[in-house]
Image (cartoon, rainbow, N blue to C red; front, side, top):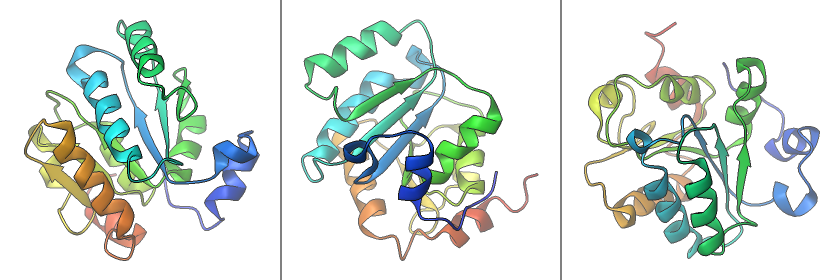
Length: 183
């Protein structure tokens, strides 16, 4: 897990995404589609963000007992062209997705120290997360992402916009520096 120097669009092409899918900002969620991870809040957050950026994409990697409910919800909200569902995959494949997104999004109800947050930061990708357990150890507001104290999708979407609108603040270097104590 490390940043890449190739242009993200080139890597997105190599991953097999169509021209219209490769464009715009990409958010990533990688994890179980279960209540603890609040995937419906994640979709609501993304829907609100797309009001500012209709070309954005949300890549959701994972499976779980809420998968069909989440897919139905995405369809009902009219987001099926913007939300891309992928099954769980080996770490060697997953790392490629971390490397080509613009932000990692975690809207969980509770966590320990989520590996997905560490992996994202190692790849130089800022994280927007709810304030769950240990995330404040590595996600530093105004530096490597934003920890949102509220579970309100509007507040989380505002944090996503803040991060994506300010790449000069949430740099790859800041993200990797945030996790340099972790191996």
